[in-house]
Amino acid sequence: SAQIADLQQKLLDADNGDRAKQRWDSIATILEAKCALKYLLGELVSSKVQESKLQSGLQQSQASCSDAQKMLMEERNHIAEMEAEFQNQILVQEQQHQEKVNHSSWK
Image (cartoon, rainbow, N blue to C red; front, side, top):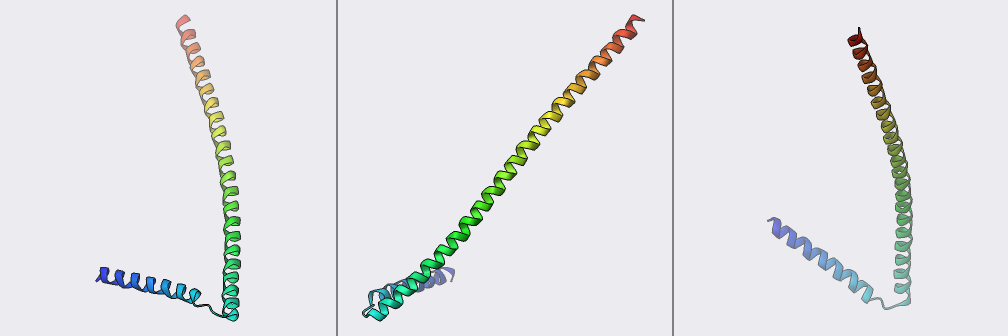
């Protein structure tokens, strides 16, 4: 039944496509041509508005992505600095410990 429904939908889609083509092919008067042209221009304007909205959204997303990448790099640099500081503190503590061990062995 799913296959039958799928085939029926395909037939309807094909029929609607044929009807649309027949409508355009059957334009015979200037008035019909004007109506068709008006419709097409309306669709063009609608598409341009949609394109503009999508372009604006894309630009906003790109700016947000750029900001996020900048923040990520700053955080990575901060972590690297903290890690270097931590390693330095470990080295200082190891040296202090070694000095204590050496100092105790001298006594």
